[in-house]
Image (cartoon, rainbow, N blue to C red):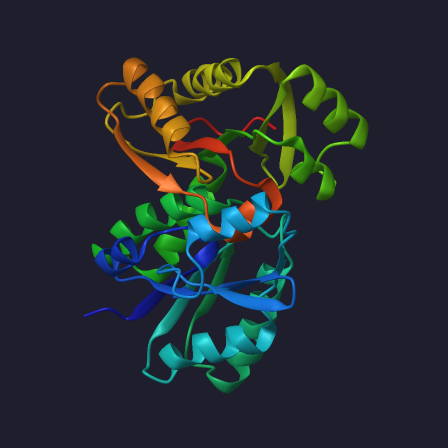
Length: 293
């Protein structure tokens, strides 16, 4: 019998089937297109993922909303009322203020439920990287490990969860302040593709500028090889795409040629991160060496 509930948020980009299989609870982010607010739920009930990226292609400039303190309180409290403790594995605090809201919500709820444990962990991960870390933690939870042990494992392993990616259109990163207008202009003219990662503190870092899409994907595979040294050859790895499944499949096959034993899954990039990258992102996320940056 479980004594606590493991919770994540929809930025993890886990499918409903994955959430159900792992018995995970998920609190949803929101995003905004024009004057319409959409819930980023795993089933995409309000707007499909493809329709979201089509909106961007047609000129929409979506924004995202934080999960506020009140919504966190309501979500956590439904489990606390049942006599369960709560362990929340949240979206990187380096990319959103939502995690700080979860910490404040937990602090307030401890006064109301002093006998309950309410633990929040900043995964310093995003999208499927966060999702992969959460699924690995869920295996420990389902195996009966206590709440503190799972929390400590996540704290220990979160900076070993590597996320490497490249984008196709630089203008979305320019709009979010991730790259300079000069680089965006020059990059578009010269077919330069920025290669990025999530650093140790959970921020986006632009670490390389590669000419050409295929070369950028080759960079991802090379960096993966450097960071995967000594990691299990049969581990679960997520390959991610932002409404470019053919490119996602190409990257998956490139990785498969190097690591034939990996359990590779092709994942969609959801709207919360997709609002900042636009369509055309490809990425890989895996457990390897500790992030060096």
